[in-house]
Length: 308
Length: 302
Image (cartoon, rainbow over all chains, first blue to last red; front, side, top):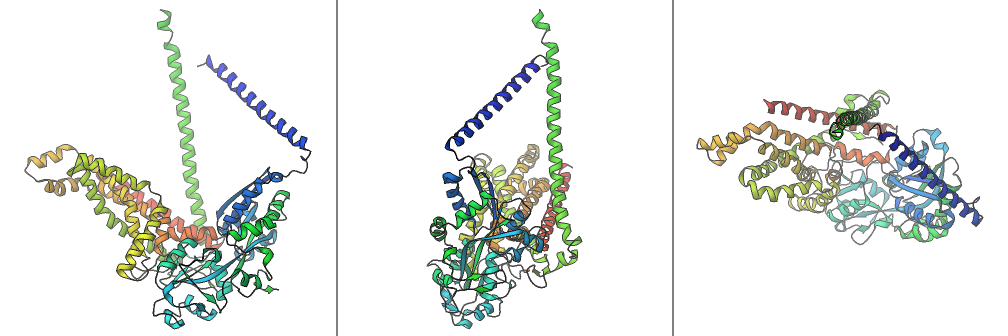
């Protein structure tokens, strides 16, 4: 062993030196190549980590893939993770993530106002939600007051809101969910407690399954989840369609936010601009069931005030 | 001649070095392991206790409060519904799974040791390899509609939760019980037969009483697994934050409410800290289960 030790050490150093040379060589050729194309100075590079909202995850992921495939941005890596809006906002304000994805305004989630001020909001899409019921409920249209009565547990049978004689089963999202916050804020106008016997499911897929299968069930889903297995309810007589949301006549919608801490760096800005470009907004955004920002004829701030 | 003598010294040295590298390597691993374990306990405890010491929620309100409404005004942080939900589902799952597991284990070791073991063992081991989300989905697609058609209502609730859990802990319970039964000295069985006892008499007079502590170890470990299981239960139990009044009513467990809300809350908020306190309750309960198993093992040795 003693005799072999120097030999082993020598081999190790040799390998290390060789490896170092190898990587140096690689770097050299790469530099030469980019110098050759004459764009080395303007080419963007960096790592972008986007964390948060699972509702926004599919869009950011798809846009990230496309972004990295663009020649100009090939040195930028985009990593996307879920974890929920709260996680996204926490991580971006702690500096662990470049972008924090959120379904709600940071003002509604973060308790520390100083932290909210550091964040810059980039709204990339709109998500609208519709109340849905099981098909046997026998109701097609509900007013705001009726919805409030149902979700607060005051009305327990469909016949009291003009439907069949069936007990109402509420399928909710967890009280901390961004989807639920949006629905409560814009459809019901107030926060609701969880009434005894109601069901809470974390994923929209499970909400859809339970509402479509459970007799007398009511819930709410983003427009991309709606289909024939459910009765989509009108809200105050207004149908949940993209046109109605864009025109501002249907109120139950929210922005999807991508927060950065301070102004974004060049690579992150390029990525955010890319998501807002027509290429993504007109194709991916609509394909995935979101509403593009460009079509919106109304604007809304964190307090919920709507401007034309 | 030289060749015969020479290997001795290097060999000794080689062993000496081997001994030391092995020792150093294992010590590093052990130190790392201890550091990891203590930091996990410290992290969960510090986060979980800050609910009480920083946010000023009293322990009795947390453990005994029936209202859970962290987003309300005023906010309530009563975790009693989740604690009862966890205990009820765990106990019921153990009640269902233990007799099934015991019968399967007896079948494999006492009744049809050869073929039974060959067929049943892999089948049961297969169960433990299925991811819990699959169990949850099966529960949501099969058990919930089944309960709904039999008992009416929504089908979602504690009954569905404990049925799913019972299937999930069956492999743990069965394999530990089977190990315990096969570890029983042959002499006991043979002397029982020699006295003229039938197979059933041997099983319930000799085999089960002597292996009882080890059998209970299986049950306790199964319960520990059931107590910590989150995803599958969360999908079928309904997650309403209320103390349930019937088995078919929507209820929550500690784990289901943690997985539902953790990602949606921001670090450091009271809501988030309260969730960590629940994690702390889970951790403490796991310790209790571990201690129980230790006590049972001690009894088993005597």
